[in-house]
Each structure stands twice: as structure tokens, then as C-alpha cells.
Amino acid sequence: MTMASSLVVPLFGVGAATLAFWLVVRFPGFGPQSVKSALVVAAGLFVAQTPLLNLIDPVMSAHGVAVALLFVILPSLTLLFWGAGCLVRSLVMLAAPYRR
Image: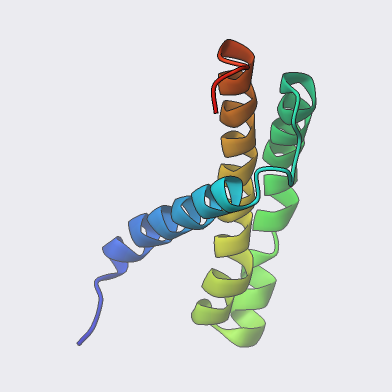
């Protein structure tokens, strides 16, 4: 059974978002807690995406597509979604600080 290459990118996006959501929910004390620090972390992760994505070609040429997907693209997307999740969590806590 082969998977169409057009399905790989959306599936990796959904997988990375699922991993990041799990991290945010499972470890709520890990990561930035205030809106300001979460915004700084999210902005830093957006800036860090360019150097991380520049690793795709060297890793793909040296080790193949599967290794580049699993060890470069999936972690970089997961970090990006995790930063966004921490930002959303801190904004929700700002809006409703006494609800848990």
C-alpha cells in the first residue's frame, strides 16, 4: 500500500499539532506561563523556523526523505505548534484566571 505524496504534508501537520497539543495539556507547567514570555517564545520559534528548514536539503541528500521528515520537519512543526499552544493557554488564563 502506497501513500500519495500529497497526503504526507497534511498528515505531518496534523501529527505535529497533535503532539504539540498533547505536550501543552500533559505538561502545563512546562513552557512560558505569562502572555509576554509566551509571545517572545512564539516569535522566537517563528524566527528559528528558517534555519531549521534549511537543514532539510542536507539531511535529505545524506539520509533520505523519511529521515528528513521524521527528524527535521516533524520536530520543527511540533515546536511551532507548541509555542502557539503555550500562547493560547496564557491568553486563556489571562481572560479567565480563576477557572480550572
